[in-house]
Image 1: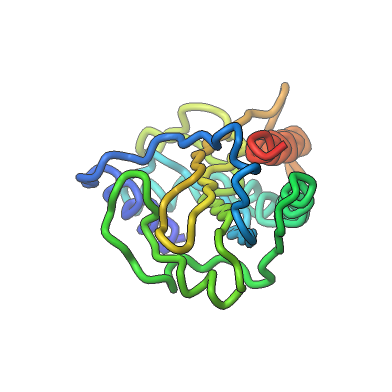
Image 2: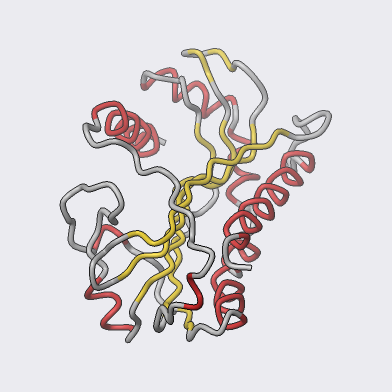
Length: 226
């Protein structure tokens, strides 16, 4: 629980203190697949689903929120990720349908193991040269899911609304030789349950919202490559 609290605090602090403008959407050129982009590797990071309580901004607040939602957390941690992980293979299929050599990288994406590069708009924050070389690819389609599960907003100790199923992260196509972003999209999807959400122990309404969020996220990423 405390690791989650400190991770949330650090993430919010990094966002607040960032001096570099946030990367905006980069559209894939209409003629991209006529330009022989070479061999593309698809790599993906998917965290385990979990609950988060933004706004519960002190340790005691967060402990209280966690205790109040313990049955929800148990249910969320059991949500499957198979449908989301299948996106990697589905993207390979889409790319091949566009005439591109594409391969799914077996290993999960571990951005923290890649070298940092100078923050610069239009370029990845990490150097992908070594990873691309090991996979014998020219470009990488990176799908980095940063948050998955359910978030419930708080004002200190008090919940300000019902929890929502969330899928947050970014996806981008990067030229491994230059680290230039050829396509970039940030996704921040959230959906509440229809009707009553507090139906322990399975929380079927919120679980259904979770699967809807996954499908919407997958469709959003696929859209640029269809």
